[in-house]
Image (cartoon, rainbow, N blue to C red; front, top):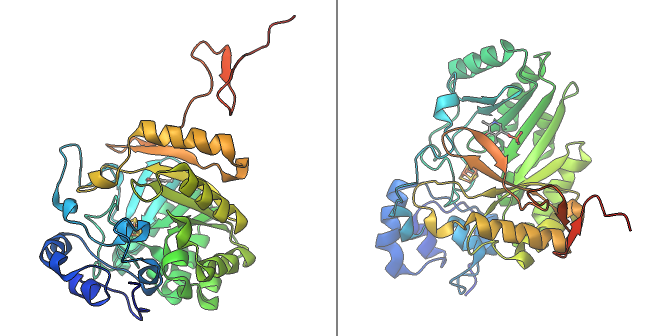
Length: 350
Ligand SMILES: *Cc1c(COP(=O)(O)O)cnc(C)c1O
Ligand code: SF4
């Protein structure tokens, strides 16, 4: 049975039951999960869930699951080592030329596989005025910082007015040339991409890029496509990042369809993330071997525009490394083509 059209974000297991997204007998198990990890499903995403399908890929991303309370020894509350690289509250400075600025710890939806799941939740709010001032001072004080990445949480849950103030203060820093926004909002709450929000994001002085988090082709609804078109038409290039998730997008057809749908919307696939070792997410992770096989399948069948870079964020804070398949033999003399045939390089003279 399809869920009724939701008007507001669902935030508790009993609201999920009332919306017919989960059956009532799951309530106690899901309440235990919700006590530990935040839950939110926006109307746009609730409408996409086919509750009759036990393997629905949208439900798998947002509806809590009892397995989230099973933590593996290799899983960690800080799976990519952000804490070690946080010089002031809200800033993560891992690479010399760019910083993450986590301006808010709330999101429009709470993804069950979130790598910051121990940090994000409703009511966690944004950085205080004094913390924000300290973050701006830090960025202003390091001329090597060329790019600032607004992250969170999801920066686009802030009001247009607050976002505009942040963008203006970053734009005033001469050595910062690029502002990047990491967000899921154009897909999960497309109505938020308003004229006022576009005005807030666009700055005259700096290049603004937006990186959209999206994992399944069904997320690109007509409203999501229109929201992305508004951003791109306003002069904001949009790239995508996806998390490789078991039972959501871990087959070549789904992944290929996602990448094609994005390119058709003028969105360039940027990263495919190997799922991080966040607590209670083992049921959603694939192996790296599976990820490499999927990347080979993409390379074999789809346009170069449809190829993201498959990356792993190395636990401990060592940063992202590409982990896609290798086409060059170890001796450097054999290169494999997209159909798996081996060729000598340079070719032998006849
Ligand atoms: C992922 C990440 C970035 C962005 O990396 P790119 O490869 O430039 O997309 C920057 N800083 C931190 C701390 C990150 O985790
Ligand atoms: S939107 Fe991003 S930060 Fe928020 S829960 Fe999902 S993955 Fe985590």
